[in-house]
Amino acid sequence: MEVIIPAAGYAKRMRPLSHTRPKAIMPVAGKPIIGHILDEIEGINPDVIHLIIGENGMSIYEYVESRGFNVDYVIQREMLGLGYAVSLAEGLVKSDKVLIILGDTPFKMSNLNDEIKKGDFIAVKEVSDPRRFGIVKVEGGKILDMVEKPKNPPSNLAIVGIYYITKAKLLFDSLKHIISQDIRTKGEYQLTDALREMIRRGHNFRPVGVEEWLDCGTLDQTIISQRELLKYNQHYVSRETVTIIEPVWISDQADIRNCVIGPNVHIDAGCKIKNSMISNSIIYPNCTIEDSVLNDSIIGESCEVRGFVGSLRIGDHSHVG
Image (cartoon, rainbow, N blue to C red; front, top):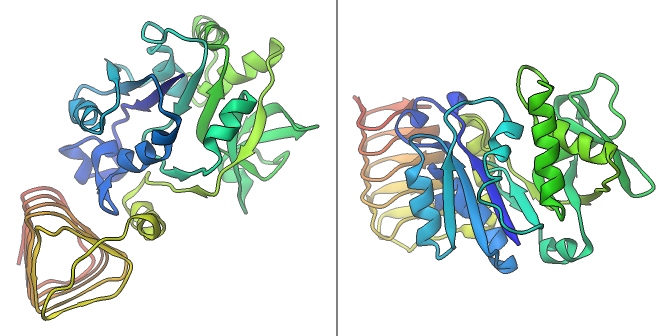
């Protein structure tokens, strides 16, 4: 089985942090966003992972390769939608069975391997306001249709971005169909439109639930999702003069003195932090923070923050105070 991970978006909602790195490689709860996704697919032992990356995406490839996966990539130069992105993998895919996972949406699915054995599925999660999501229409255990942000939702089952398909040729034929016929939704070639075409041609999908579906599409949502991810990936060592309020992930290579850290904090390697309180925040590598109280903050790599109180979102190599 092969895995396709689209991860080429511009991540405009993640600026200023996404100016200097692709979203999938941004740190959260102890590892890059895509690292939490790789944790979930290690157990299925994929033959190869095909990455769809942007022109600045080689760091994604290098990270996935460093995790021991067999990996290749194709560069997406035009942002024409998720369906277009997946279509670029056609020349890389060699088998009939593919698992498609969006590269910016960590998830928890303990039964992933079992569900793959049962056949084609689209992963879903119950949501309180289905009008905000792509929603599946289900009858008799089969997905009959998919609707994007419907005014009158046919269910409360949102599509979470995990798709298992046992007929890759039919998938790519359906993608070619929507692109050649210029079938777009909201101006883009959508994967859901290709999946609807597969259903129209007689292919069946099951809805399969996931335990966790964590959005890292904005800076605010990334901080919220980190709290859930820290349940599975907390780490720190005790330090004198430092009070820890769990959950946190703190690098062993961070120098922290006379601080209160937590809850919901990631502090990366090379950071030097003293006389400060930090909560609900992500601190990138090699930052210096002194005499500050930070909450709901994301601090880019190699930043200096002194004497600041409040919420702060700054890109790499910034200086505050």
